[in-house]
Length: 137
Image 1: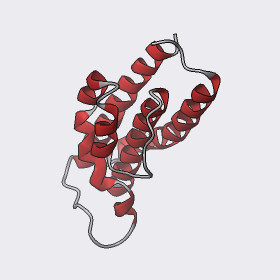
Image 2: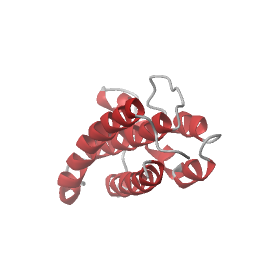
Image 3: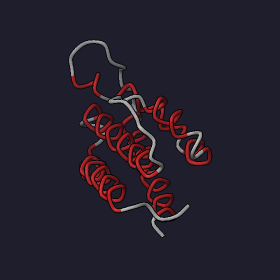
Image 4: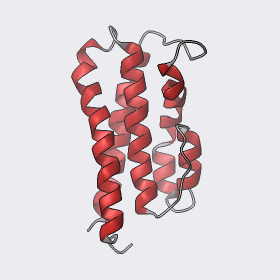
């Protein structure tokens, strides 16, 4: 794959900056994840979603306004089947997205879910950054 053009690089950088904001917050809260599990799970989902959207941008794949990681990975699969497979476990984070920000119907967090959310976001970030590094060579 040839390196992306400047407008694509700029869009990718914007998505990464937004993802990194969420990611840095969860890293700061990691030691207190059990005290703030809903916040940790939400920002883990948000970071993962935005990292995946950066990959979609680099592959020039249009995507709807959605927080559904499974849907985003389905869009990624044709252009990056290996990436989609490596990121498949991030689908677990979808219910902790936007719906969690409102009272009502959202999944109950079980003990250990906040730590699992952080670990999932870390893995997504690692995979996406490695893939993007290859794209930008």
